[in-house]
Length: 259
Image 1 (cartoon, rainbow, N blue to C red):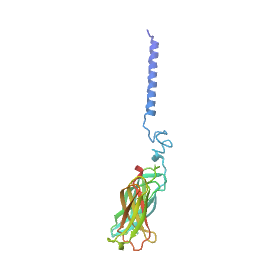
Image 2 (tube, one colour; image 1 turned 135 degrees about the vertical axis):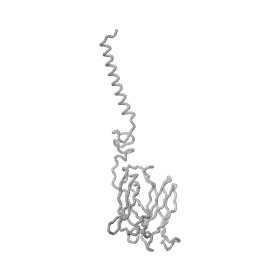
Image 3 (cartoon, helix red, strand yellow; image 1 turned 90 degrees about the horizontal axis):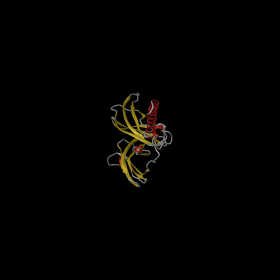
């Protein structure tokens, strides 16, 4: 017959074993079955540092702000203008999926005429154009435009190369040389990559002889196959002088960050 003391020892020993077992089960599930994340304090996934780099690049990436190189008001017809801004992402490795912008137009007395808001993105080390069309200013004459940028998404490290696209064979026709009376610019865009490129936006700017932007236009390509060239064209309904300066074309592939 088992003594009372032996039964008590067995009882307490069972409790102790059960407690240790529960702790071990908890530790196992916490450390070995918890999904990996960018906030678990561990060097896992493809991180280069704890919770930083690789899948977690957006958590730790510290990039310089996108810069507004210049902005211009482009006169069209009475009561309407276009506005453009040249933006530059100086970061060689970092991109962001969402930047909110506000274009504010002011008259000669620094009184606000109108505002236009929107959202864009910034690929790594990219200089790109934001073109806003048909802003209604009524009878007032805008004298300056102010551009404000607010980054909505964190920087993300991008290790893949951007698609290789190039522009050549430019030809500019003055308004007097076209049927519709609008100046036109044509060019050839070439995809020198070995894979097709999709969602291509191309913007063109015309400058006067003093180097000031006086007109802008844009076009879009759904896809450009690998090792292929295609003709693109731009029309400028702005009132342009017969003698203009240089033209500049900007190519960007839509949001390569998500690819």
